[in-house]
Image (cartoon, rainbow, N blue to C red):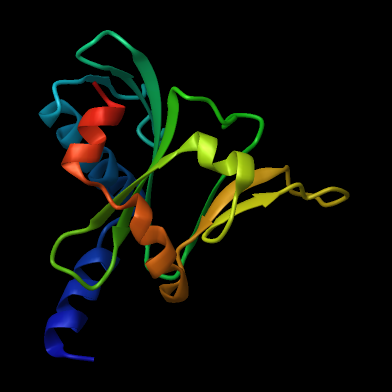
Length: 157
């Protein structure tokens, strides 16, 4: 691994859990506000759901998760049901200078395919969940959800 990669990875490792959460929320909030949206942050310092008002007046929910490469992010089905007004935003801290941002419409979980997961967890201790694999091997499939300002403008008009 190059010295640059070591330094970049080290930069993310120095952040506390709350700082990681805040970083992801700030990045996604700035992008949404850049599209003309009004964003209301959660009242909790560790909450990840942003309430978003689009320029046309639509109310949306954006669940933000900040993760490191190689991880797995999930939401319980109890609080994250597929709906046209609900999105998952992933801020992925990898080897690049800036984090990668992905925007996944929750309706994609109605027919989940990798890297998206739909785990019923029947008979297990964990609740049923929707998730996303952030393994290096999943990045090519995740690319279809990479934040693109043009596509985001369509979603958040």
